[in-house]
Length: 216
Length: 216
Image (cartoon, rainbow over all chains, first blue to last red; front, side):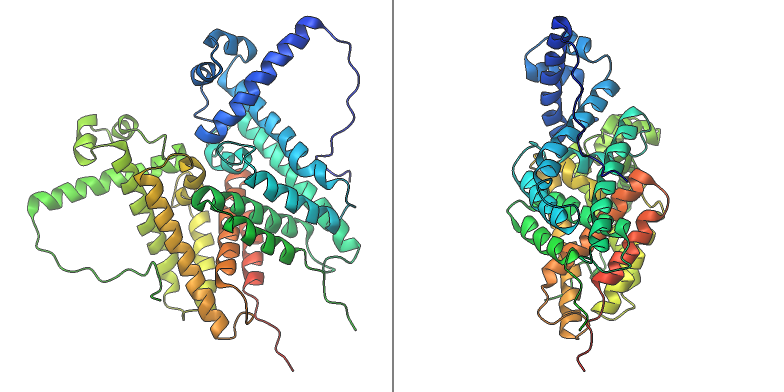
């Protein structure tokens, strides 16, 4: 299985001036929308508030995004890219398996602590918000989180194969436990502040990835 | 240290008819508000929507709760009581320490799976929502979650003392890890449905509370 969330090289596409300008506008709107959604939630993200923050008329935002649902999907896609840039990419210098999982943990806690999002990790908070709201935004979130859990499980599987994690361990169980640590680091940090959340998360991450004792 | 979240016996207070009716009205409003907030979030909880769901005029809700902030605090207090009824109380027949923590896990997963809340556990989702919104609701949430983490840590401390968990383990670290499992069970279940979340959570809970190997 190919490791998920690894960016494929982009095919060169011919440049069209008007389209390029439209893309830049959309990118500016989405960048602001990501920050707004991290504070007010994906449901709190209205075209009116976004236009207000950007200092542009509502019609400009409407031109770039036809509906709130389109905007929510665009925000989740951009958040996926941010996850790749800040959490996945820095780990790719390490070998698949336990070394990459150790690096992903460090990158993840740095990203959660570092204020990439004004209001904490959007992917962590969106699940509760979109529950009971079927639609394209929820589908996008499920797709991104499936890909992320698969990325963790894929590396856990390699670690088990390499003898770096207990033989017979379940890669999906390990992915669940690692996700639990990051999700709770974000939760704890949002609620209590300080860096206690990341100290506890680092200790838990190391323990979850502890090498099995050698048989003598 | 007294174990937190254990309900103290209530002092008898003289009964006042008008006050008792007012209390019943507030209780009815709060019960509905808890369900609404679990779906739409604490911020999505407006007096207008609540009145609409209850089929009463907005003024009745206003009489019971002066402001949205008052209502949010009342919802969080009621959610704390629900947590005590559904998760803490069933564990109190077991001894303080590891037996109680095992029982709390079972009760917690049952409560998350059982649809006590229409839209998933309110306490789990509220942290992200109230971040960056200082005020009485956020203070109440911090108080409840501190009490809950203390309850877990207090039992972890007893388990370490009893030799049921590794000597030298950090009770607060164990509380963080147990909280991570429950929080993520809720997150996973909200997002993916099915009972995979609770299978993974039960396995992680047992492992977190595994007895240390006896020295021979």
